[in-house]
Length: 247
Image 1 (tube, rainbow, N blue to C red):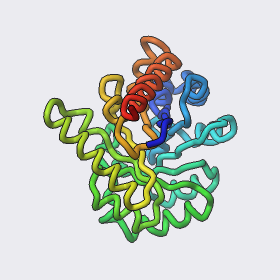
Image 2 (cartoon, rainbow, N blue to C red; image 1 turned 135 degrees about the horizontal axis):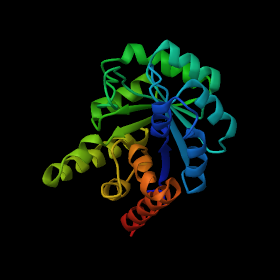
Image 3 (cartoon, rainbow, N blue to C red; image 1 turned 90 degrees about the vertical axis):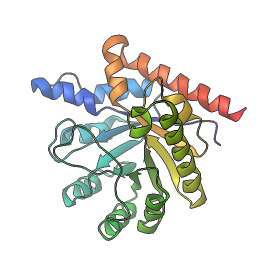
């Protein structure tokens, strides 16, 4: 297991606050730079079909100023593929998207959408974009990711964060088994969704995970203690968990 677990900070909900007033403040690009300064290894931004938080200009400005990788979350649509090809971010994470959902509700059905996803993955990859699929921790979905040509998966940790006790332990074991399976079939494995200070440690300690993507919680914590403080604390918790797992 590598000693450094990467932290990607999702700045979507800084844009949510900005858009509530229809003005320029708070600026998600400024938030991205603060997060990087506090220890983030990359920035994630999800450009939704309805532009409810991140907007097109945010992506352009992020690409112009970031010296860390941008992970462009996107639905598997022609519009989003065209935008990704125009900007060519370091990575594109394909996620399921429903207009009525408050947040991403589960993983992509990569197995069921194989024929739709395969040409999209090929086109993005040809442009030099590292493609990942956001999936549930299910070996069938990981095998499907390999089949469509995606080199990376991000495991959905939402259920792990929502349940407690024995159910949480079972879900953590499911995540660990999926990460091991990902390594076995040659996938780089990330994880994220719903993680906070209390839940991140056990996930950070999972062998074969190389990156965690965390957003809403950090933006919420920023209201009370500042974004830089929240990112530094998350970074420290991840590092401690990874160091403990290596002993």
